[in-house]
Image (cartoon, rainbow, N blue to C red; front, side, top):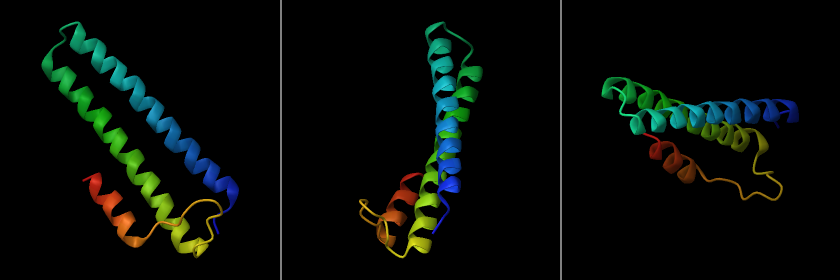
Length: 93
């Protein structure tokens, strides 16, 4: 089983990544509203999309690690089946 401090660290990093993406998205919205150059807007939008994708992959990776190490011991959470993990992974592609 993964040590609790490592799980907390992974969660903190993922939340930080999502908060940065949220800030980037707010900047993209402001740029669109102000009529900014489309190249700059698309470049920033691509960065937001990439950050969100990376956060999603991190979340799925953590779930996969837990499934492999916990042997189904997830407490109140229903364990993810391999098919569910695959579906989640492919949803990001």
